[in-house]
Length: 166
Length: 166
Image 1 (tube, rainbow over the protein chains, first blue to last red):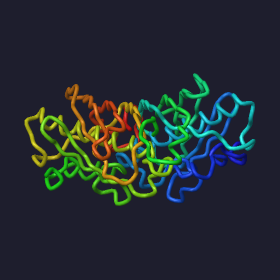
Image 2: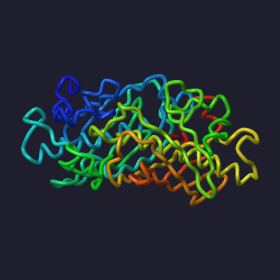
Image 3: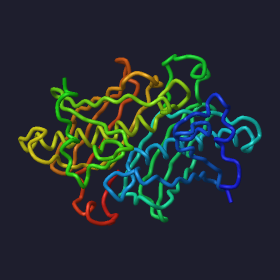
Image 4: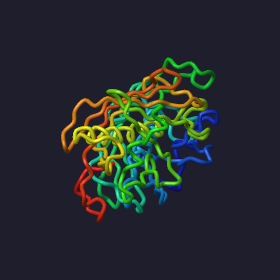
């Protein structure tokens, strides 16, 4: 059961573990957790009743958020694996989003747990591209491509704005 | 001052005014408000301190959410104008998102009010394409293209999942 295991976000360094979408240290946020699952990656999240679009459906901004953070988490997993490491073997590398492209295929019903799955389509030391699906009750309602890039070290130290980061 | 004027979301019909991003009837949500501004559209939003990515920067999911709802709001304004109406002259038409493509150009500082601007690049009765910028302190940190489609009438009545909607 991957949910019982460690998520990659559990091993983000403390100073970069505050993301509203996936930071374990953000008490207000979604705290999305991402796991390897064979050749894929998986995250699961149950929206709150107020995460509404048209009543009865999940709002597109939450869907985009989940796909975004699943992308950076998947990139971190891919980077660990490229280094021959598993989750828990040292800090996980931190990626930020360079681009996010979401196709909303059909309305996503509000209520069921959502499952986000990722597949790495390209990975270098600096950049990882992840193709994703989001599904509810086994029906894919959105797809995405995320381009994630390794977080520039100076993002932690100062407010320099010269590098991508979502 | 457009903020003193009526926003297009003020005139969404009551049964479709609950979007977490822009619904005036969602008490938990962002309640984004979108205004015409010459040939453009504009929305403004100040993130909360917990809308963090890497500390000091706005999380990409919020940025995607603002660009998403600004897109559907801009589409509604474009549709009103195509009908020769202004905001406040009857209900505003409701659009949903078919696709959202965000380019994160640089980190967005957390603190200042964010400004989202849109420009209509294509508009038919059914579909509106909006190109957008998001800026903080006058610096554009993200761009987006949103494809919005008119909400299918059945989305209000049932859980039919055959049509796009984000």
